[in-house]
Image 1 (cartoon, rainbow, N blue to C red):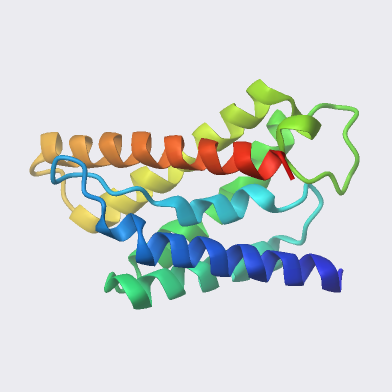
Image 2 (spheres, rainbow, N blue to C red; image 1 turned 120 degrees about the vertical axis):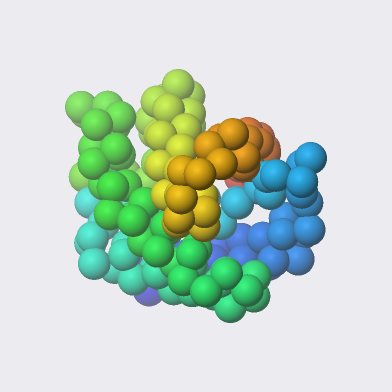
Length: 167
């Protein structure tokens, strides 16, 4: 358990550094920036404690908020996504999976893992950008922001997952 927390802390630091130092400076057509810190939620095992998952998500979101000058935006959207994460994971996990299975391509299967990533990322991005705009006044800009950021985030996280799978 202690090793797992240390590994998760290193993932948090790595994703935070990647987000703050690189991804926050990418703006696709002035709309979307990749939000890769959501990948932290992909690594929580099937039977993990929900309270611990929420605390990790809130802590990650709070750190991103502090370094990105987005007060409460990342922490609220990531905590909301962490609330929904166990539901999606249980739904997409094979029936014969172990109770402490860590989600990845090998344990879930390629397509189930991609669906898991797609659903979590979509949920996070919709929550994030709805909280950011707090309005449906300019729905075309909101849609462009959600879509462009989602596509960039999805591509970067798939590359990270592919590199992670080669360990």
